[in-house]
Length: 93
Image (cartoon, rainbow, N blue to C red):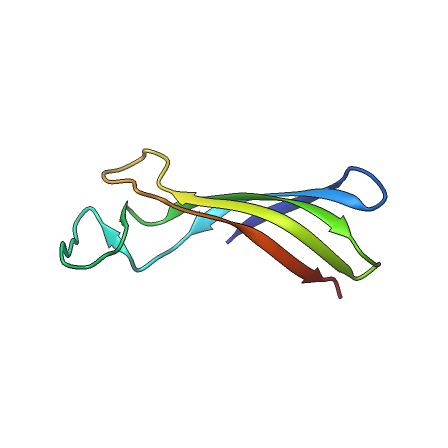
């Protein structure tokens, strides 16, 4: 859950910024399974932030280079966090 803003840089390029909360069923400070290969996230909910640099191909289609990070922001115990970097193809209705 969160908010995002799109800022036009030129007629075709834009920046998308977002922030919100991420709820998960991962490991927190009270649960831990050392045999599993999963991140320890510390608490629930987490802070979710992200940004994308996009290019409008047409009025409806865009491509974006994206970055997002989910973390407890140091607000509680363990904080391995999760980071995703990638590309997106988007269609606007």
